[in-house]
Length: 274
Image 1: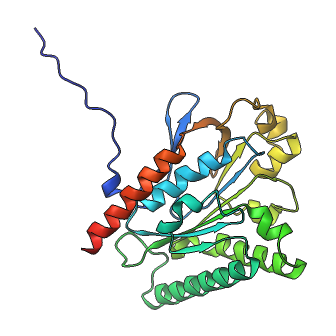
Image 2: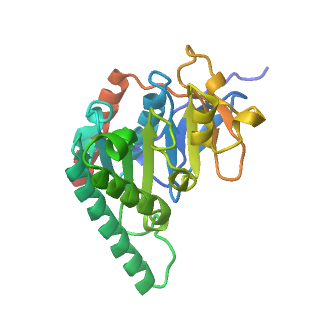
């Protein structure tokens, strides 16, 4: 007679997470986990209000918050979407375009400093053995900084700095995570969108809005976020480099879950500092 063994529950070793580990976003429609290696890459998330974009964004932030080798730079034009993570952030910018520009210039200078050091030691990129944190820059809501707040010159400067960080930051350990609920060409120009290795489109209002996120022509091939039902919150199409969009469901973090994770991450930091 076979002896029955108790199956161990699925667990995530959060105390040992690294920013170099894949980030869990949810599950694909075929039941497989939607895990993405985000280091050396960037991700763009977009969708209409209430589509689940914030839920997807919080999964990314939660992973970084629990990683001792990651530094969080949070830009939140509304102050409340990322505000729950504020005490874990190394930099937090609210609805202040001047402060946002100053912070981006500081991050650009740090990126340049890292490249100078890589050049000095004849290496192409940082890795997990280096004594420097990977910096995750999270921008939510992108439209407030690029098209709403401040002057036209300030908005253009913000987009220019962000584009440089997306284009050059990866090998220097800078990850850009950008989110918007207004996927339009003036908010996400093609020259910026095409630099994002991952693009996650939640429900959009039109076929063209879906293509603005995923790339031109995907909607006509049947990969159209405008066909996602309004009640299907958290459902999106995830496009990875060189692949085709895949339908997925985001893992859900409630505010209570986030409060617990923030407290746990705070305790981990205290333990490491002791």
